[in-house]
Length: 214
Ligand code: GTP
Ligand code: MG
Image (cartoon, rainbow, N blue to C red):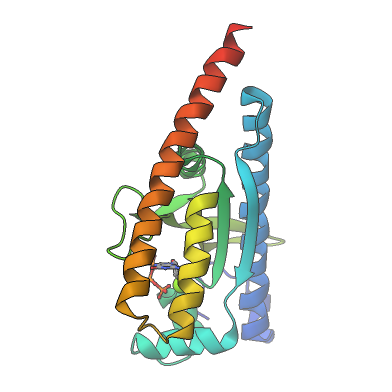
């Protein structure tokens, strides 16, 4: 199998189950790191930067579909090499500043390698989509070796998440071709959500300053 450093005894095991076990481990690893950062943040700043965290493994159907779309055969090697979102974790934060705080803290960890960053907050998509995307690779420590696994991390505010959920539902319903008036309305909502995030952040910063005075 294409996974570098995988111990020899894995040659005898089912490759699909091995890969799924490794992606599951990668999700647990990242979730724990995020939870620790959140606990520490709360300890220092007295508020929870994270609203909720969702982790998911891509379904076999959508793995095959994506490989096909990219022009690859559906093999275990191609899954490991070509796809970066088999393991995905979505972190929903309270404020925009929390997004960058978490992204930076994760990126700085010595054994984490940042493979890709797409900052759709600094550069929103034309439809209004905002979120911070990062693909990292983390080591999984096995009994007799260590392997690197990729995890896609999406970090967004509650407002961005609210918007993305509805936009996804609408695009799904219209199979990616939502009527013009709905797309326009979605774009307006995305911009309003961005203004809301800015104002909520400003209010929270004022609150934080007041709390530091006492
Ligand atoms: P995928 O093939 O969909 O994984 O896209 P990609 O590899 O080009 O990566 P990108 O970082 O642009 O998007 C990855 C994921 O972000 C998607 O699978 C969605 O979960 C989310 N996403 C990206 N763009 C949009 C959008 O316009 N609307 C919504 N609702 N979600 C989006
Ligand atoms: Mg994806």
